[in-house]
View 1 (cartoon, rainbow, N blue to C red):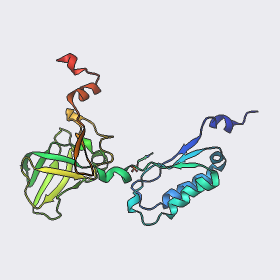
View 2 (tube, rainbow, N blue to C red):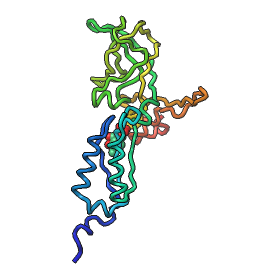
View 3 (cartoon, rainbow, N blue to C red):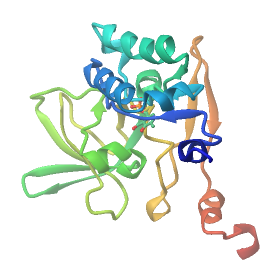
View 4 (cartoon, rainbow, N blue to C red):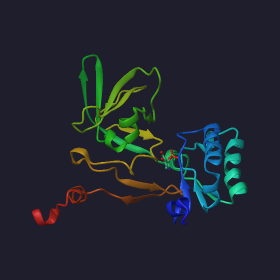
Amino acid sequence: MVNRDDELLQGIKGLHFHTNCDATEFASLLATVRHIQDLIPKFLERLTWVNMGGGYLFNEVNNYSDFFQAVEIFREMFGLVVFIEPGASVVRSAGIIEATVHDLFESGDAKVAILDATVNHMSEVFEFQFEPDVLGYSKGGSHPYILAGCTCLAGDIFGEYTFDAPLDVGSKVKFLNMGAYTISKAHRFNGVGLPTIYMRRSNGAVQLLKEDTFDDFAGTSGVIHSAVV
Ligand SMILES: Cc1ncc(COP(=O)(O)O)c(C=O)c1O
């Protein structure tokens, strides 16, 4: 008689799970691994790899021992190849979105600066209400602004920031730590193009990598723009 487990698990070589979000310590990861180890040891014995997902802020961790233990359980006890998928930890601080102030106006007591950027390019701001880091933001500075995006989306607002000097039309506003969860999740609401991507090399040279075009936008709806004009 065919063992039902054999049948169900046929062709399965690995297990993928994800526990962390911006984790600077790994007690929950180790607890998850111990739980899996207790629950399905026979299953683990038949695998070749395990993937422990992402959500690690490795450069802010003081003690790695729980992480090492988690890896050791899979590697030493079950002979598995262990993968992880660190994203934010590797690329978050590598990206800056630079925006330009397009318009300034007063709304009640507040000054609003409209940027040529949008929260649709920063999924964490819109979905999780993260306040993005802004270069030149000075807590308690004497020039407060609501920084807002340029689409008609209700909620296209980055947050309230104070600066030491007033903003003008044309001023640059730089959002720091934008390397993760931006381009991969950005979209073109209202047809606002995705940010142009430049790379700054270690010798200071700046290289254009990718510029979003109207044809790219039209193409997402299956429209071949050159056939319409
Ligand atoms: C399966 C998986 N891998 C990787 C990641 C990336 O996480 P991070 O970029 O925070 O390291 C996530 C985020 O939720 C995830 O769910």
